[in-house]
Length: 438
Image 1 (tube, one colour):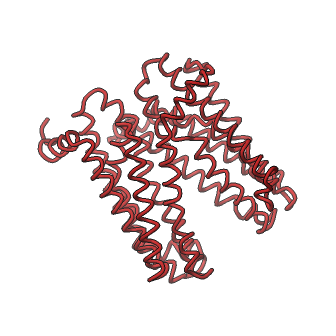
Image 2 (cartoon, helix red, strand yellow; image 1 turned 120 degrees about the horizontal axis):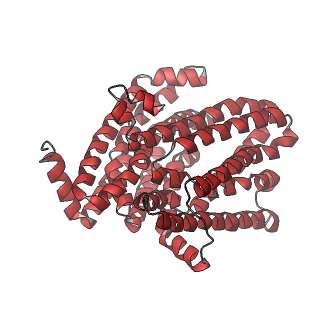
């Protein structure tokens, strides 16, 4: 497909690996959201609203515990793979350590969930559903997205992801017909994902000739220890992103919660844009940093300009179409939701300010700095959101979330400057002083 497109004037841009990474990451996210939207009414009709809520509650527990399974390798993995792209022996070592560390963490997490469910009688209402959902921990552990992202070869994994979600959709249509079968929903989600992940691992082993071997326990321990700050950063970030609705629940009624929740879900989808840009380009940025600081800075500047421009257009489009978006999704004109969405519409742009900081932190592997910034952000978000929500309700929360994006940019920029003054000075000199030179 890309070979045909390359005959057009914009073909050179489409052939760029970072842009391809971005396109395929968008495809993965879009397919996940689309299948989720399609499956929602099918499941509600088959198992009922109550069981549907319990299925999603179990899925939320799994999504949170998957932070432990990933243990920050979704951030560090692509960088290590990108640096070792041409070193097959080095790749084998990196892949083996990351893969088996994730599988080890999946086993530990699964055991803790089982002990919590049967030993301490947690998750009482949805215990069986949660146990059948544990397969998702192992599908997450075996997902080699970080490998293909680092290799900048995302086509195959994006195709298998779409195929996996389609198999899930067919599965619930064929096998889920009553509330008693709700325990199988997340299991059906996990089985094709795990099967296709194993296929991808076989492809890596036999076609790409990257060998796997069980590393020593000591190597797994050091691998996990090296990523502890990334793991903690992911937990703190999850609390920061998900905390707004929880804070509002203490001060608002059910109607306000519903109105805000609709706008927030839309915004959380749009806010993925800066994250996708960082994930798409930072493997190549890691390689360029090893080769030449000047090449790295020029690439960083181009990425930043593109990211800011794309995010600004997205924010403006959301602001001016907020009424249309809410009316389409809610099938009615919800004035409060429209107001909330208009305020929140500038979050993608404000979040994109931090693209440059995210790339620098990941490329330079400054994990402790990332954790410190994330922790400060979390404290600010919780404090400011609680204060403004108490004073002004959901509108205050929207303003607090906007200010959080701006404050985290300031915090990241300040900490990065203190740690990397020479790089920051070089960036401004090359980008704004001499980027016009050949």
